[in-house]
Length: 306
Ligand SMILES: [Zn+2]
Image 1: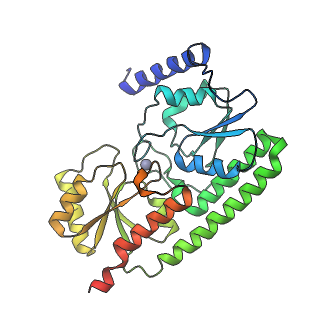
Image 2: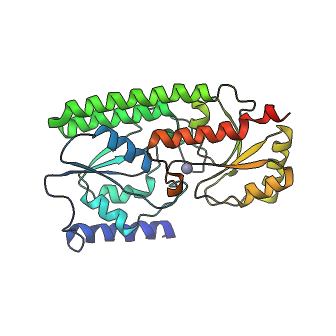
Image 3: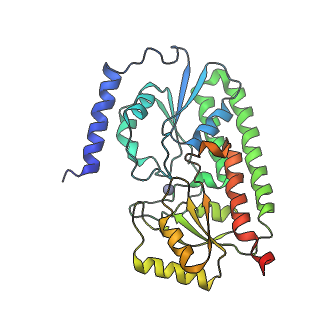
């Protein structure tokens, strides 16, 4: 059966062929001797920027820049495909996050870096998902992603191997240090139980010793049923949660309904896929810190109020 998804993939393949063969070869793109690295997500873009810092002749681009909460069921746009077609290196977050671009990758000549290589993965939480792909939300795993990226860049562009190695080591160390600092921040939380919007925070919870009770949206794009909502209301009361979480670029309608019913507050976490400009935050470290501070604000104050 030719379902909608397969159709979209087919159209994508034809488009990318078109871009590669004739219509798209953008004249204005980087000069011939620039090494273009295309990162699929914002976190991987940050990792690639850090690893290539100070290296001349390298340009890092971000493939998906739309305001999405996550990439499940994402469909590549023409401009996404143009970036893929013109890339020398494509850096993936990995662990299944980019399954939607398998066909585009198959027709690309670029070197592909899978940043999830050799990282201990948690089992998938959504149907058809072998592993949970949200690895970047754990700073220690993010450090490993950076090391994977720098190791592969050393092979791909040996002329600048020393710079990639040094940048990779320094960045990985910084991320591990950040993890330690943020764990300190959350040490005194009075409640460690989380209800999140989508199933994206298992690694985050593991990194910071938090406990995910449930997700409001169990499957991407699915509405919580009346029964689901009742169950969540039950959990909020049972655990006396002072807050539940929605997500940047995700719907907060269900969370707000639960809040009205229980008197709990709603706070907003980011998967770091894309972040509102008015936050004035930039880079992996700032954004992860922001999430931790939100958790601290949402769950840490409960004791003082009693
Ligand atoms: Zn996700």
